[in-house]
Length: 82
Image (tube, rainbow, N blue to C red; front, side, top):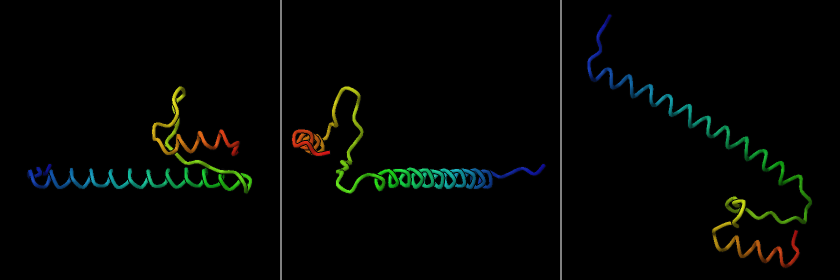
């Protein structure tokens, strides 16, 4: 069995870590594209005159914590915008 020097071991470990990181990044990109494709299909399937408000997700008991989407969502509810 050949013994690795410290530098060779570090280089081999670095290459393995880089390979795993590359595949994880590729997987994340694929998942994001599939999710965006599904969302785009959902958005395109809605009627022409429907407003879609994009904001951080709501909690079960509290509205969105950012002020502008909260203000806009409240205005849309009061105005009866669908």
